[in-house]
Amino acid sequence: MRAGARAARVQALSAGEDHHASLRPEGRRSRHQVGRRPRRAGCDSRLADALAVKFPRGLTALRERNYVLYFAGQFTSQLGTWAEQTAVAWILYELTNSPLLLGLSGLARAVPMIALTLFGGAVADRVPRRALLLLTESAMLLVSLAVGLLALAGELQYWHLYVLSFASGTLSAFSVPARQALFVGLVPRSAMQSAVSLNAVAVRSGALIGPSLGGLAVAYGGYALPFIINAASFLGMLLALLAMRLPRARPDAAALPRGLWHGMTHGLAFVWENPLLKVALGLEVVSGLFGHNVTLITIIARDVIGTGPEGLGLLMSALGAGGLLAMSIMVAFEVKKHVHVILAAGTVYTLLLAAFALSPWLALSVSLLFALGAVDGAWAVTRNTLAQLLVPDELRGRVMSVVVLATRGSAPLGRLQGGLLAGLVGGPAAVLLGAAVIGAAVVRSWRLRLS
Image 1: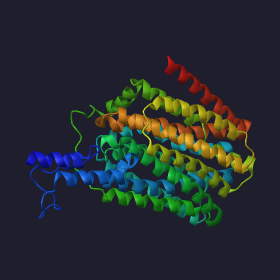
Image 2: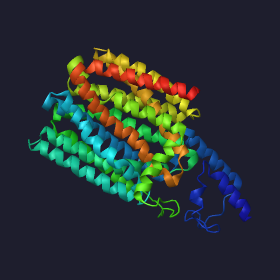
Image 3: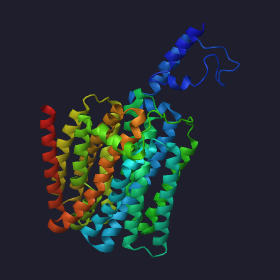
């Protein structure tokens, strides 16, 4: 009798969710079952079928309460982050009128990201990830609020935005690896692509709405409003983290590195020994350094297209809209040949980036950035899914810190490179040169893959 009930329960729990049931003793019923007659196998089977209809393959991660909370908090946080980043770029360019000084904000963010991300990943594997995120998200809230109050008092100067970028980069070096390691642990392994794709949907949804919100906030609410919006947005993630019901998981002592330095290098060694990850992250570094970024788009928006902060917000939101479309499609389909998708996306990305460099019209530029965002979104989800599938959980924080270093470390340096090059040859020429470098890297990666 017990064996039959156990088999029925396993049948009712799909996609690896039986790890939740295993937390309850075998002979003990949940509080929802007290006073009720045991369900028959047929009833459990019908329940499983109903759940399968309610949650298609791409949405299986939404069966997990903790993941739903994370998804909501991630969207709210990303909304404010994109609003602030768009506003910072416009305000800096307006205050300094210098492409180089605009690009320096990327350097201020990149230095702590590059210096501390591997350390942050090692820390994420040693301490409770929720506690680490509560600390970093609270600190980010206070930093954005402080800059907003400076702007509200009329005391904001351009160097304050460098301090903001440096502080954000420092805190992100700890929060992003912890966030990447936390959210995939909220779902069974069979729902991994669903979790990664939905996380990307949350990010791209924020990237769709946030830039327009930031541009409109600067245009009609002044310099202070975008920073206040971002400070408020961190409350969403903080509340989500506090509402999660997480087990008191303790790191496996045998899986922990011998020291923090060993932990930092262990993640790099894992990536270096995996040729698939090397190709994916190598292209990510090149695209981060020479691809589209808010510095180049800001310069082209003002100096070539001739639009204001609301136009910049529209251009940045087009990127987010394209990315959101790609995420929505990838939620419904399972990707198997990850490297092929990465290389194909890199080829199309190069062509679209070159076309954007040659566009003098707002409508055409919006359309091209929409397509560019879609390709970039497919690229990002495929890379992250590949990384998450190849990494064992005890190494997740360290390896994901390498992924974060490749993405979030190269992108701010790309802003510096873009600002410096745009100051020398102009925005369109800087974008064209970047497209040429990315194209060469994609061709080389194709050759390596074929060989």
